View (spheres, rainbow, N blue to C red):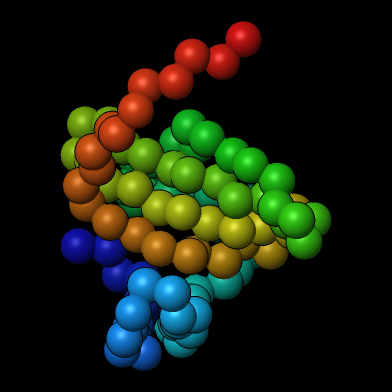
Length: 97
């Protein structure tokens, strides 16, 4: 299991129309060191990235042999682990031009 500290405090959801706030601790570090760690420790490599509306990038890392994955958000210098896991399920296959 990954050694990232991921504490999650969920505010109960009374209905789907309500806004819910999640509070969690995230681990951040220097971008290149974080990427090297994911590659060496977990065999993960970047397979998807997207720009956010706050001028950061979210990157999804995956080890397809173990299904270990990490989702980070970065400003280019700093990388923060948003979430980690050990299983995946492909919901829709999308073809990009």
